Length: 237
Length: 383
Image (cartoon, rainbow over all chains, first blue to last red; front, side):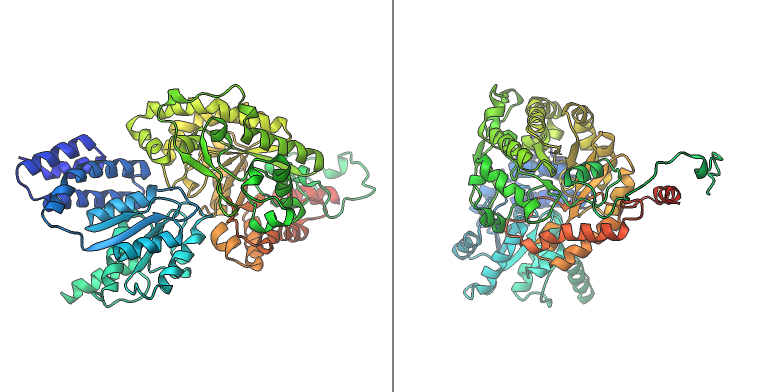
């Protein structure tokens, strides 16, 4: 019988072959794709937490993401075929002038696992491309990444374009990347910021849920705000 | 008369030369000052430096040397680079504003971009170490020829100003030619292949450094981006430390190591590698870096680009410079390539702060005093 715990461990340690073979076994045995996906998403959550604690670095994250991507490729046709559609859409890209896409790719991968549809614009993306894609796909969220201190200033132009877009009142922007601090994100008036890929998923979900009026929060969202929202939700229960 | 309690020697018993005309104010040339600071020696003033790209659109317009033309025209490159000294009052001139110097000369495909952007690789051409070939005419390839040509011009025009070269080491050249993701994954999946990449790229990097020294550079900044934002300190130790120990001997002149981002957990390793200086980012606390580097390695840099130089005021930059000099930084410099739309005012505040702080801290010994023991010794000889 397919062991989803084994799948989770395979993703955590970046063992692509095992991740694929266990996924194949699980599908063959009729385990629902969404259950298998949950297992992989949990694994990437563990990887993200270890990264946030600096127990692992980008290379380990990358091989985990590679393992998940390979296994996810088996699930995607089945998820689509069964009518399952992500309920949130994110346009992702590295900001204009910046060709580094590691961070963006990691966040995109983890958002995919968290039931986001991802429109990946790649690197060196100007504000008008972000906006065109957001309009075309009726996106909930724009996620912008930068690795260079020299390019992160360009993020401001995307935020300004979103604020000026009266036809997209629910569109929100989150920013991140190695040099992008919380203070910088607040200053350019982004809607959210996260220091790493794992917490970016939580922030992205909270930002979209807030835009949809499903939380009592308004204003900037970072991992501390996410934690407070969770605590409030638990208290309400 | 004072007596050294350890040796018993008195200052009065020592021969001393008669000082007839004491030095006053700033008495070093920028070149001498920069090199003295690089080796943590006496300086009349803390040097204000450009070690990374400090070209801006405003400066390009001022001397009619815009990107991308200035990357491949030695005269334009020299003219634009010289603005760091002529306009910003810096002690150094650094004419390499992009990361493609070695990779393009190795056959890489470069997108030279426009005036408001830096060049970058168009695609990653190398997928196996065995594909790397250093061409016989490496030094004559356009990027190399332009940089060494500009340095020769600058050396003739500015004999008293420090000229700094820039080299991307084998780790960073691999980012440009192999791609960051696949290269970093190989550090886990195939470490032997990573070592073969490094060995394959290294001769070109060393030759680039030597060519720049021959063209007139006083020092080169060597960048291998083993930043804490990407990989662990152990990765640097296991893949690069021993290689850097050899490089710091083989390049033929003073070496400044550059690595972006969070690096405090590996600063001591950079010092162990034998680098003369570490050019570091604002994500590293200057005092902690000073403690980690000790006396073995000078520290330059640390002025934040996006929030200070780009978005901050001249006064904020001025204050930040004072804080850094108080923290024991040996030379002031932007932490990395400054955004191309940065204004001249905040950049010019760096040299002004260096001059004012140094004037306040320059004692009768005519040097900027940092070390209390050194200060005590100086004062004894003045009496």
